Length: 162
Image (cartoon, rainbow, N blue to C red; front, side, top):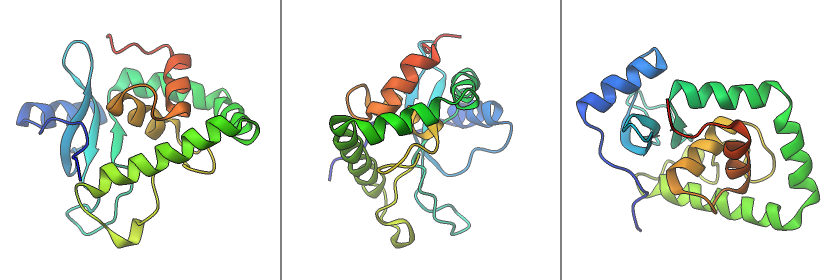
């Protein structure tokens, strides 16, 4: 199985992510996206944390500016709009299903954790629950895989610049 798109994290990356999150970065297995300045914006996290906890969120949005932009969308009801779109648009729904499958395949290329088998993140494939996870997925794999993540990223106005 091909590995998902990421670079192994350096200690400097881990230090930056720890600063971005305001807490120790846990079980980062890769840097999946960076800003134009080279800062991590999305990390890939091990499917099972060191303490044994299953962790389904493989792509984790970490850059504070990106997190703030997406949080603003969530606070303004954008998820409800995306859930409506998901219910009404057969093509988007089919693409979102494929995004769900892609997300699981990426995570399982690192490790298969039975407790989270079939579970992706962000509410996929049936609803929109966490735009942060969906935007993280879009940033990590590029446009065209996760339609809701792509739309949310565009609407957030975050470009990857400081």
